[in-house]
Length: 111
Image 1 (cartoon, rainbow, N blue to C red):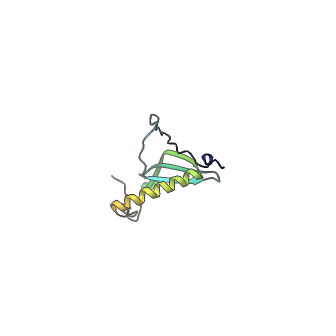
Image 2 (image 1 turned 30 degrees about the vertical axis):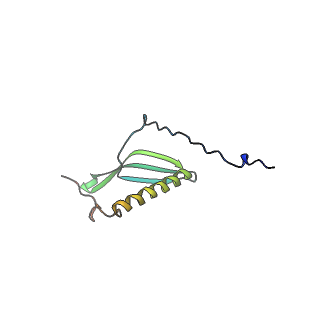
Image 3 (image 1 turned 90 degrees about the vertical axis):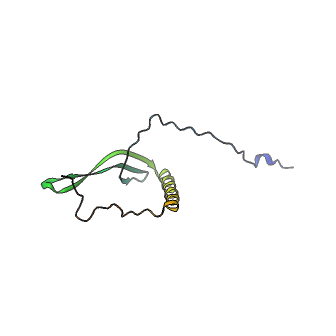
């Protein structure tokens, strides 16, 4: 006679507690990515128009946050973002990536 009790996995719920006491919130309008064989590096920050040499328009990328994760975490992030974007677009229509792009000739600087 076989004992099936060992064949069944117990279903347990685990409570998830989220500690936001050390969290910083920042806004980013751009991201820079780099990789190593073991990790993905995500630099979040702001593209800020400024004047360069000879009053030429330039952009300063001000990095405000860096997140480093392994490739498994990066894949989970990509899947999660894909699901969020798909759900958003189903409710609100396709996100236009060209909307708000600056005209050719570089950024405009306020006087």
